[in-house]
Length: 270
Ligand SMILES: *[C@@H]1O[C@H](CO)[C@@H](O)[C@H](O)[C@H]1NC(C)=O
Ligand SMILES: *[C@@H]1O[C@H](CO)[C@@H](O)[C@H](O)[C@H]1NC(C)=O
Image (cartoon, rainbow, N blue to C red; front, top):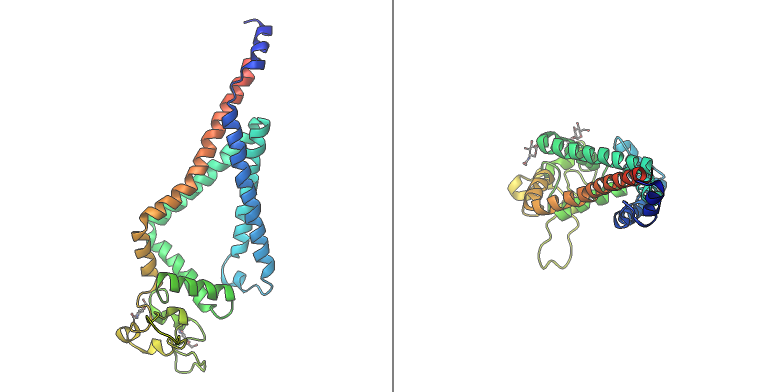
């Protein structure tokens, strides 16, 4: 074909679909802003904690996890955003490749977590045990444990005697704590119509047998409650997983389409 004719055609006709290009741009931009928000929350949480017991409690500080996730997301979405705007193949390829890696990593974790559910349960148990041990040292951990026990209507990890892991609630005879053999108030099952809340309802619970104890506190450990919760909310769990996976798959597919359209465009004007 005549070269001049070809160039004229390139002015009016483009292989690049503007809808795909701008959708990818806005979509990446949205998550780019979101990543800045995650970084800000992580930094705020890190600065807030002057006495950093959480870092000693867990292998990695949750605030650091937030910052790392935010920074990774920042770079990936930045590549998608600028790559789509400038029609830059190298940035779009970086975007597509890193998003694929992130997606496959998440998929691997989900599949391993499913097939190694016993190990997953043990790992979670270690996490909760640390939260129980440091319940009185860190207000965030205290709030977290109280929230879990109240929301899921459970007490301890295996059962209520797990509270002996904590120095204050430990049920050995030598323990001088006033809360010896108690469980936190968040274990207590509210009595319907009760006017004055008995905040001491958890006292001495660990000395009682199962039948006695379950008259005033939630009888089931949080591990079993978590399993029941997941089993009865499979639709929600699946929906959340899909909500996490779909934007990633969309990003990978759209960037691949855009890359091939840009390549077609380039070869058509050559
Ligand atoms: C609580 O759980 C522990 C560990 O699984 C078990 O040894 C203990 O017998 C349980 N106690 C009650 C009262 O169920
Ligand atoms: C309670 O404290 C005693 C003495 O410090 C300790 O030996 C025991 O292991 C503790 N109980 C639990 C369940 O950690």
